[in-house]
Image (cartoon, rainbow, N blue to C red):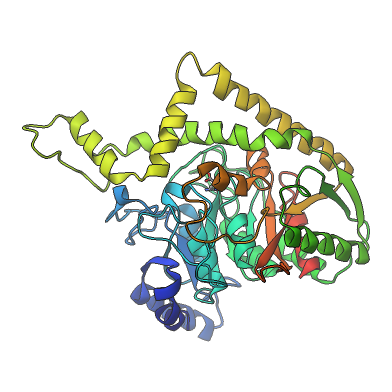
Length: 456
Ligand code: GLN
C-alpha cells in the first residue's frame, strides 16, 4: 500500500529521492513469514519506514541532498538503520532534505524541493521535509529524521506530524553524516505519539560505535505514552517558556498553543510560567557553533574519498588542490558554501575567542536556564515554530528570515535536552497545521511521551 501511494502522489510531493520497491517487498515477505510462524522480530515488524538521506544505508544511495555525494552507495548501515532491519521494518527508500541538513524548508536540496501535502505551494519544513511529507501524505507510516537545530520538530509542526529529538547521546549517530556533531540527533517522525515511542525504542540505546552514546538503558517510553493516553495529568508541572511566544509568533499559532495548555490544565496539570532569558541569544550562538563544526566536517569531501570528482577544464595536469576546488565548487550548493565560509571565519585565529568562544559561553548559559526552569517544572512547552508553513520561494533569498524559523527548537539542541513536537490543530487564519513543543530534562525522554500522548 505504501509503494502504491508513493507511485500515486510522490510525483507531486517529492518526498523521496530514492525508492527501493524490490528491497522493501523482500523485507515485507520475510516479515510475513516471521509473523505466520508466530515470531515477529519486534512490535513494528513489517511496518514500512522511510529514512532521511543523511543516514548511511548499505546498498542504497546516500546523497545528503547534495550533488557532491551523487551516486555514492555506502558499504555499511548506520546503527539506526541496522536496528530497523533487525526489528523487521521494511525500508521504503531515502527521503529528500536540505543539502547536508542545512535549512528549514527542503528548498536547499540539490534535487529540487519537497512540497507540503497540505498545500503543494508551501514548504514542508526542513531540513527533514522529505521524511515529514512522506508521513503526512500517507506514503509511509513511519520515518527517521535528524535534528541539529529543529530538523525533525519544525517539519513535524508544519506538516501536522509528530517528531521527536531524543536526548543527545540517546540514539547512535554512527553512520549519520555529521553536520554538527555536538548537536545532531536521530529521531522518529510519525503520525502518533505512541508510534514515535515504539520507533524510539527500536533505534535508541547504547552503541559502542558512537563515542558520545550514553551507556544507560532507555526509559520505558511506550509505557509512558500509554500512561499519558489515559489523559490524567495530575501532579505534572508544565512550564510555559515566556521567551518563546507572543511577539513574532503568528496569531493562530499562539491561539492553538494556548488552547493546548488549557487542555493540559483541564487534565489536571499545574501550569507555571518560566523565564529563560538566555534563549534570545540561542540563534546567534547556534549560527556560530553549527557552521564551525560543519565547516570542519565537510572538509572530508575532498574529491578523493567519496562521490563526485570534477577535473577542471583547460588545466593541464591539474593538482589535487585544483581538482578539490573544482569539485567543491560544482558539488556544494550556496547554503553549504555560506556556512563553510561562516564556520572557517569563526574558527580562524584572531576571531576564535570573539565568536566561537563567546558562543560556547552562551551555550552554557542556555543549559543553566534549562536547569533553573526544570527545577520549577517537569516539562517545558512552547509553539514548535513561530509560523505555519510559508510559501516555496518566500524566504529563499533571505537566510536570516529562514534561520528565524528555528528560534524555538534550537535551545534544546544547544543543551542536549529532548524535545517532541505534536500537532495542535490548524491555524484559523490559513488552515495549516500548528506544532506544540514539549521539552524535558536530559535522559527524561519518557516525560515527552506522557505529556504528548495526553494531548492526542
Ligand atoms: N534549520 C536549521 C539549520 O538550518 C536546523 C537544521 C537541522 O536541524 N539539521 O541549521
